[in-house]
Image (tube, rainbow, N blue to C red; front, side, top):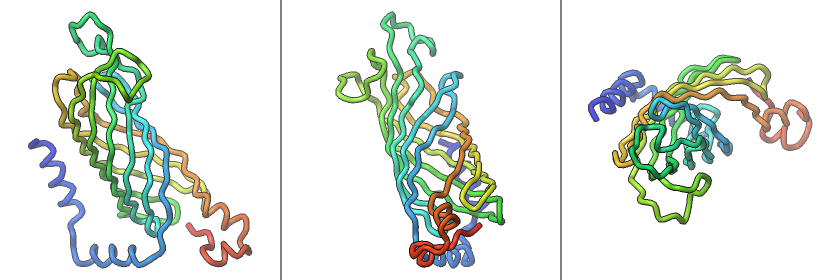
Length: 218
């Protein structure tokens, strides 16, 4: 708990809520928004094993400076109970799934580079089960899971509509120890970014849609 409190305090110190910040935030909300829909795949460690967590995100993007929304994430990798020292003879598979709320604020932006601070909070369950690929309907005991994941994201635009990016974060978890797994871990991902609206504006600059919502911009 002390570690999480320290991380939150450091984030608040790095990004103070000043009058200038609030004015910038109000300015962002005064502009039109776009839909933020993404498929995510993040890598992290659970009990020293490399694992992959997949997710769906849906929210709103304001001026490409602020993204707000929610989503669903789940453990994609197959992690067995004998991987983390459980003495049971029955082979079981670790599962977790959680709903999350996220915010991603851009604090540095040039023509090609962008740096932002994503924060994610999740609520869900973790459990052990006999079947490998089966998430719902089983009667295995489930344990409450709370996650807090601050991080930093960098992206580089190659064209107006195409870029690459990466994010690094740390996942803090509060979960029932009966799962025998520790979810506290650094997380990281690498991204290929395509802005389809900017691609449309760039390819068809004279269309009615581009004249109304465009043009493409860096």
